[in-house]
Amino acid sequence: MATCAERPGALPEQPCRSNLLTDNPALYEARFPDLERRAGRWAEDCLRRHAVGPRVLDLGCGTGRDAAYLSRAGRHVVGADLSEPMLAHARSHHPGPEYVHADLRHFDLGEREFDAVVCLDSALLYCHTNAQLDTFLDSCRRALAPGGLLLGEMRNGAYFLGRTDLLDAPTVDSVSWRGVTYRSTTTLHVDRAAQLLCRTRIWATGDAAEPIRQRSAWRLLFPQEIRRALTAHGFEVLALYDTPGPRTEPPWRDGQLPADPARTDGDRLHLVARLV
Image (cartoon, rainbow, N blue to C red; front, side, top):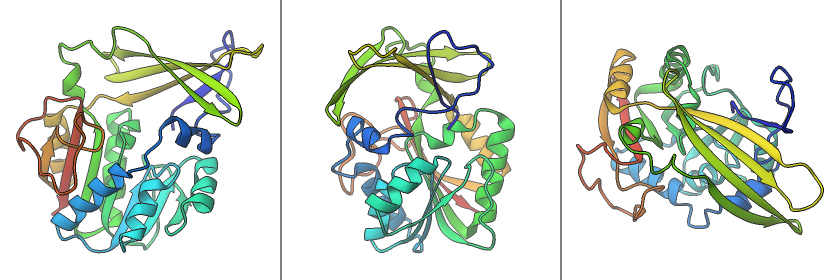
């Protein structure tokens, strides 16, 4: 979502036609393995703690790993994503949920009603503008039953106030897939005017093929900003904290409660809000 893959030197106005990871979901899962299904377990733990009903919408479900975990936990899950290759992979490799094509920034699933909307792994931050955030929250309101829960896990904009450790140097990783080793070099920078964390990732395979350059961005949302937006759209924030969570270090453990429910200083942010 809001990503592109392009050859170096391509004209800026040329459309972005593919993304190496979202167009190859098996490569995505090889690059980002989650054998413990920690994000799905964390989400299920939150849903149980707040006594949420069984109907769950997983927005930005990707390859379907977390949606399938929630389904195996006994929930009736609909997974929604903008990437058709991801959805096809989810249907064949992570069955159980119903998978539908939808843009989380403005979606309408008709008369369906859900007890919870789950938005993991910074998917909510693809709402780059205030207007997109508003339509996302409007869509969640329409989709949720009265008293329904919105559960989010994302990067924390507040972490980048005065910190540069994630921006100072590129990150280099590699993954082997179908006999080919893919080496990625990832660089992050902040567009302060647009309030975006921008990522450039260059993939090289070590052969004669030109490297592939991909770009994406996340909205940097701040805790007070999130509270205000949710309140304006009829939600009550039940929890907003930084650690522990499925992407924190050390990571969340089953049944673990927030270390400090008022602390929102870490690099990840965890949100639980109820539709009033």
